[in-house]
Length: 446
Image (cartoon, rainbow, N blue to C red; front, side):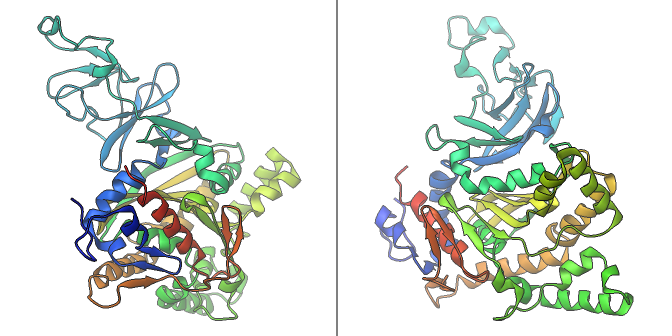
């Protein structure tokens, strides 16, 4: 029987609900291994989880292998053009049939005993078929195929799946946060995006929820990244007599000023929605005046018209959070996919996308801005964040305060139906919204 770290009683719905209060969260939410197992069951097995993008399985037989809440799954392009998502598990002895992360096959053949499956998951053949006469193991019996996930849905090429057969549709689940995908796709001159290259993977020694807390946090940047920002400002002053000539990468680092009552951070706001999703209004001036950006913008306006092109280009979102699995940085065409491993271990995959029809130099510019500057493991920005998450995970073991504060600007949020909007960029409204969603998931019985 599951027990709490607070009193060795069962994790009842009431006990779990008590862990999240309107302005604080109990520390066991981050540290308790038994709560983590319940999260996999009640959140990750219920919500829509990002699988991949259709461009990763462009041709018949192409596949991409990944995981959902420790379940190995694969996405494959079938001969009828559809994208199928199935468990990566042979129906015979359980061996994963896709051994590489990506590839192209005519059929999936188990390396253990040679059972063969089509790209739709149907069992095609078994060795020594006479040995199965009179049994249920027969070609065509769906019980012995690669089992499809209960629900699969796609929005603008982004493929999601759910381990639960019941729940809201994908578009209902995404709600207003769907704008993160719209923003990414509509920035493409040709109206489509595709995965560019492979991803960078890193494991953080921290709970998965710390990552999402950080995404819309307008206070931490000027504190955590202060020394980096000061160095960038020094570079700008010492090497460039004209401030307009300072590279965009340096400008974006330099703007991480310490938060105070007059800083630009306070002028931002977050919008937070049902199921824990949300986004922060953009604070980075992302458009730029370099030749690659100007060429790109002219292509967008040529293909979509002056007014519509300007609408697409002017939209300025920072991170869009799709809880519990995804952070979208649409203005630089980057996704970060979050996969929980343990209460204190989280895998993060960083994927970059190419805007079809955009100049190659614009792609290089965006990789420099998002991947090389901020979000891949070797960048100084990510290193700052990863260290803080590790320090938080370690510090939460201390027998000190039992609660984690989410008090900032508590009581000042603007509520509109299922939406919660902060009135100031430094509010912790987004954290309160995420933990309200966490509690809703977690207090439900399996």
